[in-house]
Length: 267
Image (cartoon, rainbow, N blue to C red; front, top):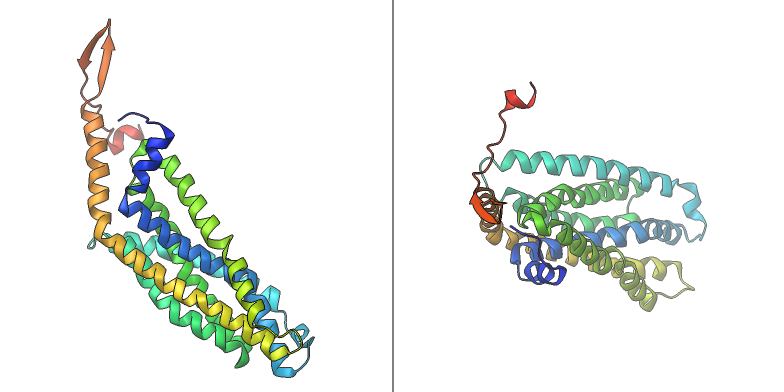
């Protein structure tokens, strides 16, 4: 296993269906999170203003603090839960990581829809739904990293991480506020508090469809994940067993060094 050129790495990654579906699914997650992080507080504020017919009604609630705290907690519990759940289910289902990501996004989509319409019903119900949505989205984070490293050979993993990062941010959380904001402006009458809320709400409905799309992409990952991991494992095993030492201009086969046992490591 040798290091190849950057261009060859890119071509190999683009032709890797498991990696591409994982990256596209994660891009959908970033798209939704980017939109919510930018507009969730504005949506709740505009809903409270419309209900009370007062542009300053939102000041009676600590919306930024409450939403920020729920986001932090959802992120912490989501990442930990995703990692734990994936590790537990992997004992019986080899593609458990992809199934967990897919299920979390499919479940998230209806919760996201109700979170977008709930500000006009009850502020506290909305906050609870926002927490659930972000918790379900964050479940995918640790699993995406694990799957990405598993389907790419070691010499291309840094390039894979860079490519995935560019995709997920450029096409995800970087562009989603612009798209949602553009739609909201087109649907909003600045002279009406109600249309300000409804315009932003309808623009954010796009994120529910993107969330479902992400779930579908992770479902496709299940078709390729096990085979891709096995291919990478075989490539690593082959490189370990075919190591060659060059001594005085002659190539001599060198057996792979066995991994140390648990007792040897700590003695």
